[in-house]
Image 1: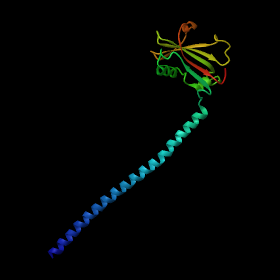
Image 2: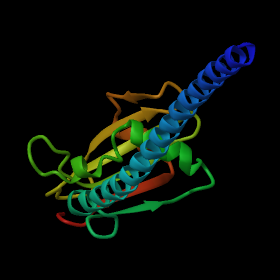
Image 3: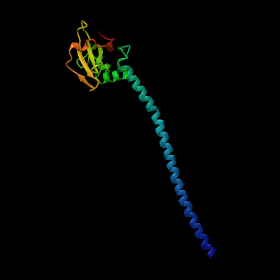
Image 4: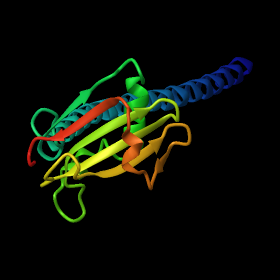
Length: 177
């Protein structure tokens, strides 16, 4: 009788152990399968969306964005006076890298034919000459400026602001003059 009770007890213990072990294995397997499926799903869906967005972005830029050499030209001069990165950063802050705006001939656009940028090294300023489409002479321009230290626009400049300053940047509209 003792052996039968011991045997039944061992059988119950073994069944409990197998049930716990099976339960843990089932949960671990389910989690592992879920994780693998999730990773495959994310990886599979991520690749096409990345290439799709790059293709969309490239095609939208190709169709909507002005291109240097086709719509406008840029020329840098006197590069030893000011770092190109400093100049480009200031021009971007001043809105002079928004070529779509500069080329826009509507009332909301810049309607620019040419922009000349001079560098005042003493005052750490850029001085701009804006020639709008249809300008008649070299004296037919608007003046603007940018303070490199304060990183703000300068207003109220007079034509004498250009006196003896070196030209550092020229932007020219190739579509209209």
